[in-house]
Image (tube, rainbow, N blue to C red; front, side):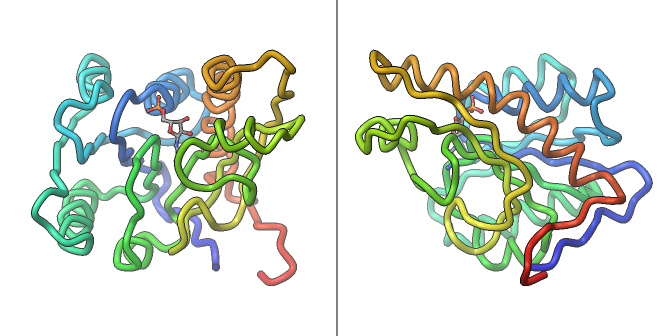
Amino acid sequence: MSYVAPSMARARIGILISGRGSNMVALIDAERQGKFDADVVVVISNIESAAGLTLARERGVETLFISHKGRSREEHDQLMIDELRKREVSLVCLAGYMRLVSPLFVRAFKGRILNIHPSLLPAFPGLDAQKQALEHGVKITGCTVHIVDEELDHGPIVLQRAVDVRDDDTVESLSERILEQEHRAYAEGVARILDPGFRLNRADE
Ligand code: GAR
């Protein structure tokens, strides 16, 4: 997949969430600490009760709830595309957005959608990545920031951070240590792809 650098001088970020929103908060905090040259302009959730919506509002960021219920994936994604375009969003960050985006959405923001996932992809995509890692018995796992393509938890990798698995780890203890790394990784990943010098280092690019 080709990477298209956001063309605006200062990027405008839209964040999609479904729940807690701790990665979203990490991105808003990073923006305010000047860790990347962009503004978080809107947070959209497909779940009305998502705790992250309150956290975004408390930080003065516009929030929208767009339900997926009773709509096809394309209909739901088109509504999100319309709202993101109205706000001239140039980079979309999925932060615990627990739905597969449609090819329509991927095409609308081609190369400009990032996701964070709590494993070292391509290992353990999908739900419960930390549990999958423990059950497999890996000794190192971590998190991945990647550009989103049409497959679940898949696409060119921007950066990864490793986390050691301890013998006495539970899903909760491992998830907590991975989450700390996610918060650092996501801000770094955004900064990296907004850097005009960013290139995907892949043989097929
Ligand atoms: C995070 O661990 C994120 O990596 C994961 O959901 C959690 C959301 O937490 N995402 C996925 O598994 C995507 N496949 P948060 O709402 O506190 O950011």
